[in-house]
Image 1 (cartoon, one colour):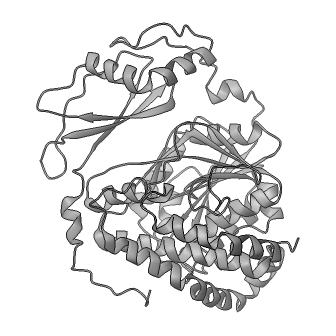
Image 2 (cartoon, rainbow, N blue to C red; image 1 turned 60 degrees about the vertical axis):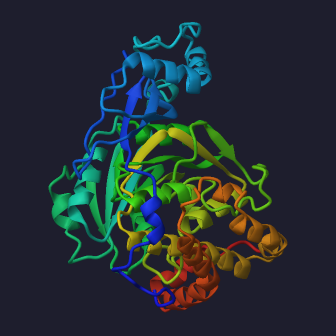
Image 3 (cartoon, helix red, strand yellow; image 1 turned 30 degrees about the vertical axis):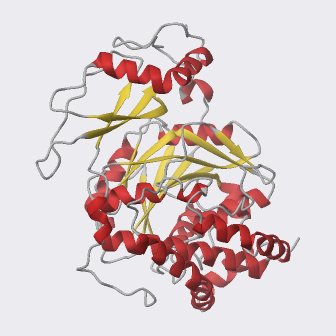
Length: 457
């Protein structure tokens, strides 16, 4: 994007102080706990720290940050740390599953359940509705195949997978899709660039009652789709569900820094949001990332149709560069429906690895955020007034070191990234107007735009 100077050979000087790579893994506490031995990373250097996703009966309850030394950390020490950091959560889960909660956490684990009541199959009895899974792609066929292989392993049995090729002729997607079972995997082409356009192309042909969306750079947990569908089916007001996004690796400074920026994880507690929900922020519901991310989300298909789908003048591949996810989440809430956050719906995301990719990602977040706000200001008098009242608080939220947005940033967080984000926010309105002009030149978009106008209430 022309507003951002490109220096592809220059690294952030501050990244030399970034945290060291992390050995990622997971443990299940309803089976005997393992010893955790340090492995060597891609450079051959042993890890000094492990980040472990902790599950009980498959459901995530916490993350365990574990220092590593030359010798393995014994299971007894793992149990002691779990008792200290997550004992209450584990016992609460056992109680909810009707199991004894007074057993201490030991190396032998905690009580198991052969058919745990917390499993999605127990919470959502058949018949199960058809769910359409949408994966958009415009390149990297090897990574796409890896994502689709994880979708083949879903425990939810009633699904179709729509792979949207947003760069027909050069993406390699047709060969990937043709190598998979045709009764499940279908190829959809959308030659017009833009993530929202690609998603809307899939929405137009989706047969499922629910539509789940993810990206081509994730590994999907086997229970992912079942958990999202169950979250939507659990409440008639729920129109959207989001899930937990965790990194698939933390090897490079850029991957570690994006976690400091905020990452994608939204915690391990189920949450429900409606327009009246108070999260302690005067910016609600316009707080970026509050509800989840587009790489792990699902909708009732009928509701997504009624909202006109995703705003095609927002999103990656347009001058606006993003903002489409928060835009549709706000539209869901303003329609009177709920968003449900279900942490048991897990995907592992391949974070961008290089400094240049990180810089562009942070800048794009800034552009997309203010582009989304601009769209809503231009289309709704009610929101225009609401957003105007929030501007002073938004400035404090962006800049204050004590705000929730900046809480995870260490002293070594590169200041230059903050500058790029703020520049992105500044140019976002102009980027939106440019994107809007481009989109309106397309007859195919014009009808979609008419359907997706924000109500003047």
